Structure formats: C-alpha cells, structure tokens
Length: 158
Image (cartoon, rainbow, N blue to C red; front, side, top):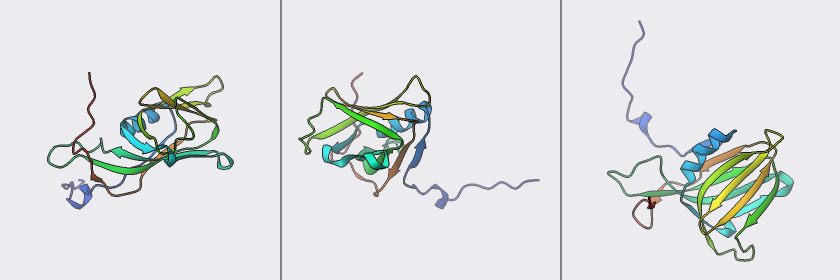
C-alpha cells in the first residue's frame, strides 16, 4: 500500500520559468508565455559566430492569473539556437530606442525538416524571421516578478 500526502506550501512556491522548445507544438507554448512582451530594440542580438539570436523581454506573467494580486511582469531571456540567418521587416535597425511589442512566436517548417523559420511577430507590422537548422528555443526568467507599470493585464480586442 502506497502512502499519499498533501502538497506542502513550500512545494507551491513560485519559481522562475525555464522552458525549452524543440518542435512547433513546444513553440506554441513559449509563444503563449511571451505574448505581449515588450523590449527596447537594443535588447536583442544575433551572435552569428555562436549561431544564437537572443532577446531580453519584459514579459507579462500569463501563467499566474491575476486574481488576488497585482498584474506582474518579469524579465526573461528568449534565446533561439541553431540560427543560420536573421531578417527583419518593418523595423529601423538604427533606432535602438524603439520599444517593441512581441505578439507571437511561430515556427514554420522548411522543406528540409527539421529546418525552418522562427517568426517573431511584432505589433505595428514588424517581424523578425530567424532561419534555423532545427527549432531550439529557450525561455528563462532572469529577475523576480515586478508589478506591471499599467497595473493590469494587456487587453486584447475580440
């Protein structure tokens, strides 16, 4: 007979997110978690020699529904590995102070799977297309949550 027990409060302590996506379904999960993230254009970089594209996001904490506490954001790193090329559309590469809003992350498989394109869709018709040999995304919270400056969750018109 196995003994069962209730979870303790300590086991319920919130921990920073640390997720990896290795296929299109995984990318959808990461996309949901980074939806409505904001970042200055200066907080993204393509390290060509390391084949890595990374962004430091201020993401809304969708995984923790706003009920009895304030709406929160947390700084997180979104890192894409196995990068072969990066293209941007609708962005001025010289304007490093522009604040970008990330709406979605989508993986589109190429003809030679597992290669394809990670599309970072931005508000205002901007997009960053990251060509990869295979999808490998890492999302990691790097700060403690903080009260969202607006005090509420982002609103999505139906």
